[in-house]
Every structure is written in structure tokens, then in C-alpha cells.
Image 1 (cartoon, helix red, strand yellow):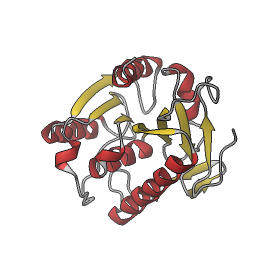
Image 2: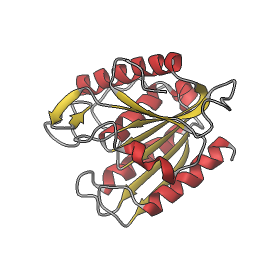
Image 3: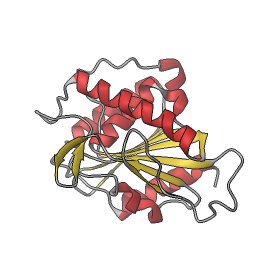
Amino acid sequence: MASKQLSLQHVVHFPDSFPNQEPASGYPTILALHGRGSNEQDLIELAPHLPDGLLWIGPRAPLVLGPDSYEWFRVRVIGRPEPEQVLSALETIDHFIDEILLAYPVDPQKLFLFGFSQGSLLSLCYTLTQPSRIAGVIAQSGYIPNGVDLDINEADVKNKPFILTHGGQDTMIPIDWARASRDRLQKLGVDLTYQEFQMGHKVSMESLSVISTWLKKHLGQ
């Protein structure tokens, strides 16, 4: 099944069982939000390192940065995104989620956000404001920005599963920003897993192994 024409160009990776064993409720789904300077192909390539049976959807951010290089919002100063641009990106993601729920066999009760860097920031912000739409968040090398007035749904975000992974040697997004996000999430009472790794601004086989274990737990595998 090819990807459909939606508001964002995207790639789709179906489970091996598709379409012969499609669950009536749809598939547990990973919505993969890539980082600044990357594209829709990037995070989909991590699918073999995570549990089987998942539908993966990877949208391309709408703003062109360079050849095969895109971003969700413009960046003038790293760590200080312009609030209106972040909020606009969140609206873009919200609309795309509406579309994929209609276009693909997504289980709406098992839709996970899987972000890296800028995509991680948006995954965190989106789930804080729309927790009922998301089953859990995988935030890699990201943070919750200060200065963005998020309308956090404190009641529904409580006990929502989050996993944050970050490199202790990250020179792009300092580890202190991740720790501040960890502390903020703990105060909100989310179901938080937080782990630091000996790496820079990247993912590793070790961090993916921890994420895989976390996903299996929350998928009931």
C-alpha cells in the first residue's frame, strides 16, 4: 500500500502481517517526527531495531532548509524558538494526525510519537497539550522549550507514558535542558522514564534497546 496524498509528504512502513492480519482496531502506530535538517526517511530506518507489528508513518516537515533537508519551524537561536512558530507546527501535526486516522489502519488508542531533536521538542509539546490523542512519547535528544505558552492539559497528562533519552555529550542540545524537562515532567506527574547515555546529539544501539524495552511494556508485549 503506497502512501496517500495528505497535507504533509510522508512515508509509510506497514507491518509484515499487512493486510492479511489487520486487527479490527488498527495497528499500534509510530508517528516519527524527524529533526531539523533531516527528512521523512530518517527515523523510519530505525524500525528494524524496535518491536515488530508496528505501523510507522514518517511525515516530512513543511519548511525547506536545503536539499533533502527540512525543518518544522525556523531557528534563529537554538534553545529559543519563536513561540508562534512552535504553536503553528503543533497545529500542523494535529491536522496530520486527523488525516492519518482516516487514511491508514491506525489504532487511535495506540498512537505513539517518536521524535528526535526538533521533532522531539514537538512530540513533547504536542502531548502536553493533547494527551488524549497520544498513547506515549519517545523523545530523543529534545527538550521542552521555555517561553512557549503551552496550554498544558494537566489532568489528562498525568500518568501519560514518556521516555526521554539524551546524550551526556550533546553539544547541540545541552544535557541540562533535558534534565530541566525531566524535572518539569515529574512535577506534572507523568509516567516518566529518563535515561542519559555516553553519546552526543544522536541515537545509539544502547538507547534504542532501552526504547524497545519501554515500547514492549506499553504495547503489552
